[in-house]
Length: 232
Image (cartoon, one colour):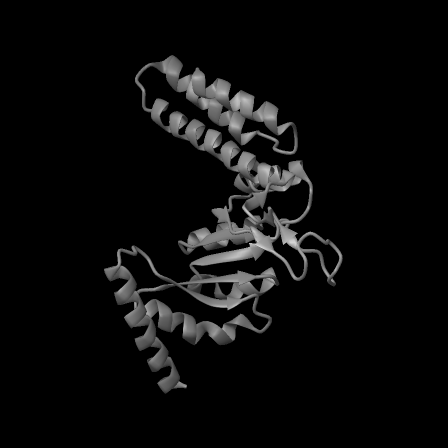
């Protein structure tokens, strides 16, 4: 109702004012967690949030539901690999697509996590990832099948800290791969404005190499090649 929207608008307005006074540059309101209804019904609420200077974000499992409300969602965190058409549509509205559950934590698969949260993520055009979860258990985290589904764990708790896993190491390597990539892209951008033609050509060659990069190969070899391009 109009009164409900007005009350929500004032509540969000107060939250925005408080958080910005604390130093927040942007404030986002979580719309819903994995909604299962027609998202067009939420447009009045989304517009109310925007009207007081806040952004909207949501986590969505049924990705097809998001297409009708892209203009009102500033950050969408979708399951699985980012869809190229959705990334492009969101970008046209100044919005961002992030991913999660690609896969969730808990699988002892080093290459899968390193690829999907590193260079594979970059290839999709997604802005980032918010995976579930560092530690998420439904029973004894040390017993895989004491509940209907397996605990989703990147690390396992012990009395004085945590025990590492191969998937957590892979997440770290994925971040490092992205760091090499970001440094290379930064260097390409800088060298393209150099006056020396040979330097400009080298930057174009590096850019062409990146454009043709196939990430479903040896990730360590790709990192070495990125390092070589950076050092030239």
